[in-house]
Image (cartoon, rainbow, N blue to C red; front, side, top):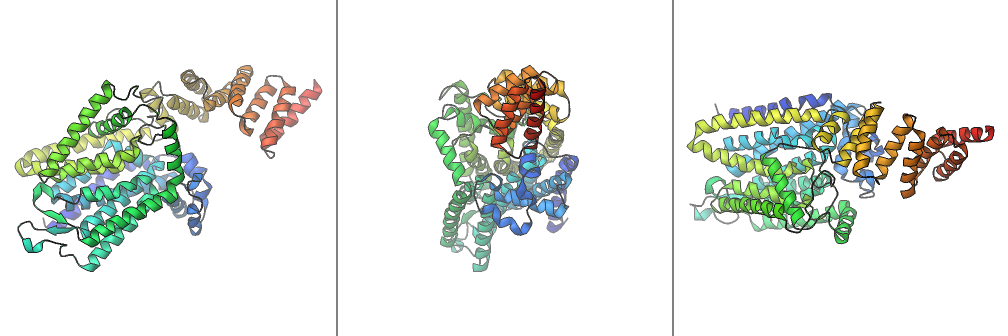
Length: 544
């Protein structure tokens, strides 16, 4: 088979792997944050001509990560409405494109078609990527990953020059033409800035560009960048910083304020533990979960406890192995370091409540896939039969795991049932499971799940209000009044006051209900539910 046909065949197989794993997601609905980010998001219903408004007020709710929102606007326009199947199909398409770009980048970095195929195939079917692909709100990571890989491909293909180590005359800035350098720099800048508009994690691109610079597979060639190339990289780093501040500056300020007021857990134990957990999930993707919040994730209690020391030792061995490979000219070492560098923005250095999120591993996993591809390329030269046996078996195992994992994301009920079963002590999982049962009309199951959430955190306002609503629907009005009153004692808004008013009215306390509905209407004068409740409460109060 000719080299061109081999490339075409490899690409077709890679796309086929993606479709085989994720085709079923086209029948799934919107789940969890999809409701707020897509269904209830007024920006998604804007015409494409109004896309510039997404940048008017950075970090003001719906415009956060503006490229993701724009992609939803585009989906709605093309589909003629909020069709979940189309949104899911676009997620699958973005993942397939990312796999193909990774294949091209890995081919350049590894210098091996077989190694590049192994890297892209492993990335295509890895279960750790399921959350980013099967969950429409994971679009941020898909777009950031796709565009970051594209930026790195432009950098590696057009800016970085091959230098034959045996030909001194080839040293220097290489033989790339001015037009090729201009194309590479422009492509890197455009793709990199768009990646930032999808997610702030793309700030690591300059570091990743340096990692894939120095070596090719097995030390066959070194790489050179002319002065213009380094200048372009510095300009990109500066421009990316400005864009990131423009879009995400307020978020960063809030995060730094939280860090000064106290981290989620003692450092460096927390960051070491988080990095080690991501690495474990990448190597052994078992026990995946949609909830790694502080309730479901056991936090370290000391700056360096036993778990942190063990995790730190494992990370040191991983980094040491990566540096050993890199020094000896194996690009796999660069891929291993890529994994950790790309995780730094989400390694809890700036704390936030969701300790780990699997979708955060999308771009980092691309680096680890390149490292694995380099390993298979080296193994294929000495043990080709072993490679032809092990790689298909590994791909099959991962594809089956990923296919089974996608089923969890079919509905809210399937998602939170699986998550609550995996983390029975996770308050958020129990709360979301209760809400899913409530939406499905299963009141007893909703009360059971929300009751467990209440036991885990007796002061959480959202849990109190949801449980009050369920108790009211079940006719337990006194209990509903008690729970709603506790929630309002923390913070009163129109919705919570309206809920309390109806509970008081159904409990037979019309006078208290009148006062409560008046408070609700003072906050939201046009609330139809509060108006209706006030009228009925006044009638009953007058009657009795």
